[in-house]
Length: 219
Image (cartoon, rainbow, N blue to C red; front, side, top):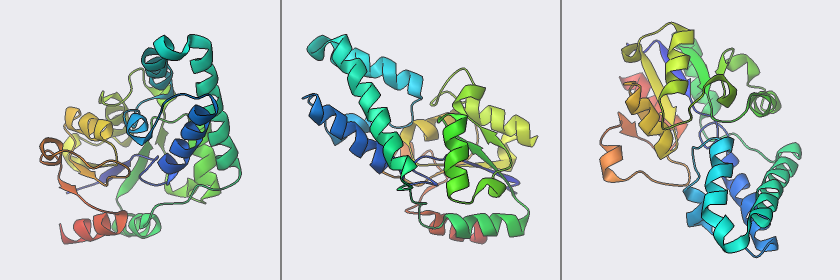
């Protein structure tokens, strides 16, 4: 029986990934860096620290370290502009699923590779702070997804064993982290569908959180 659900945030609860892609693409276009959606998809589910490292590794040779540093700075600045403007929407089914879990007495915890201030701001803007009394952020672990550290930390905070938990994730790295933690996982893909091999390792691949609620109600 599931006693706790671990939620990812970006791309699962909030439609952030589309906005971040738009901001990153704008920065790339301004600096004349060849960059497209396929390039962005390679960065899904990694920490900010890893993103900086990978971006420099990918582009320094062609564009120079200074230009890549400015590309990263602008991508974050443009993302912040959109977030500050309140453009981040919740994904379909969030409220319905949270109400269902509350009614069933199932604990909820957020485990996100984002930083804590950003997590708290997005939750507050969406009036969801009370729904996630416990949060694990990038600052709380030393290794990012696909390492299982963030989900193991969440399990420890809930004082539940892996078989009593369920992870909800939108990214391949997040799913891999849940599998490594030996916690059952449902994938709700956002920008990128899983390959067959990864999909077969999940409990289910579902189109939205409405369907997650229906899946749990029938379990």
